[in-house]
Length: 63
Image (cartoon, rainbow, N blue to C red; front, side):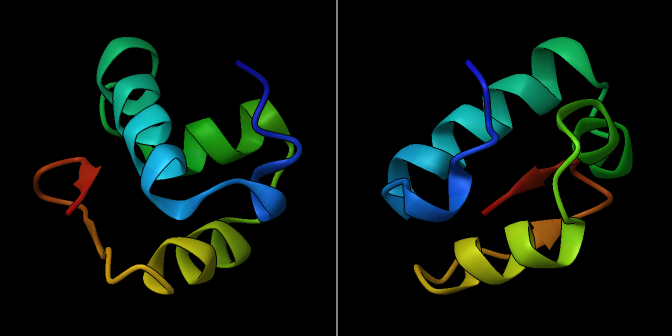
């Protein structure tokens, strides 16, 4: 799954995909995920915040 078009994705679906990628491929490291997909960390966090999700660094996921 390419996250290049994350800005147009449904935020609930996006959260699910991002959390799966964080868990399976990036050991919970949001910076690595954003670098790999060449996306803005701040923009991704803002997009997910529109649906009430926050990134919890200690858990390595959005909730």
